[in-house]
View (cartoon, helix red, strand yellow):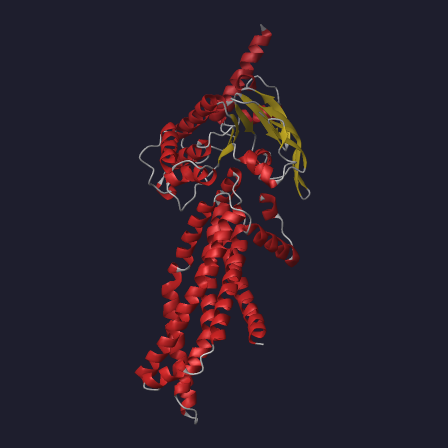
Length: 254
Length: 260
């Protein structure tokens, strides 16, 4: 394994190695209970550990969206309750899944990458391999499973907080009354949009976790390399999330 | 018993191991010594399977480890323990959880039995009342002892130690050396230690192989070590000023013996 780490190659080499890594995440575990325990630990780390930042950011995204839409609509003939409708739709379809996952790419992605990179640097991954543990499956599989489970939940929290933040901001600034805003929220509810939001969240969760784990797992050298791997993890997963956002929007809305 | 046969290892154009062969017997402390960059760590990594040799074979009790697939290798790996240079303890786990990890992963023992076994090995390495501590709360010597406890908790047939004394004071180094020696004899383990610490060589060297620039330059035990005429080995052993004086004294003694 160590020699693969020292091997360097072009994009095709990394894509190939990334695919092999993902494939090896889903092999039969040595002991399911240990994997489950690790998955729960990662669920707490990724999910519970990110709730506050997601709430904070989503609240203000919702609030700012309301104020800006209300400002634009105030100079038109469109009824103000449309503010609630527009904020709800944009939070569900785009802002909650995409902005949350971009934030998580920074927070969770750098965390996962540096955790695995440090484990590599301090020979903890070698120690697991020597014991006969399938390191990719044990270290990366639970992280991906935890992300796919927890990130959609975080995105739901984000959407609800954003919509609520918008209502509060509309009320406090006097742009939209709570009654109008609620009328907008209840208007033209499309269940498919929830499905699109959850699909996006799960796909983005997979992308940001697997790319970050790849960068950390194959990091080598010194602590400077760990830092570089973390940066690469955040940048690459953010770009891939945005590309996937476009592809999913195109596929799911057609 | 572990046998390495004509092991070569290259990284691109850099030829690190140039055909090393040796036999490491059970119940003995086998040492790989040599200067930094001589290929000791690469040889150890080739033996445990963290690196694949470019050419050659590594036999564990006659079974060719290099030719095995990952599942077969994992079967062998469950019979080996390794003490890493920096301890390689899992940061998120306590001492007890670190030592218990292989039992949790590979056995179906009851928790009480696992705890008993963990306490037994921790006692064996003289590490008591540290079960609840995290690796960051341990001294270097305690981390090494935890590493040894984790390495022996599954009753391995083979024990590998990579620079067990690095970063330790001389007194703690002696304690670790003695512990490795006692455990090897007590459990009849095949131990291979990679070191450049001369105290370890003198204490633990049942069998020693000396590597120089990727070649095996000398093989023997701690008694024959000082009688060797191999120039590189003598330069390695008598590297310090104090030992140089001892070497000169040895030469004078040899010359006086010859003149008699």
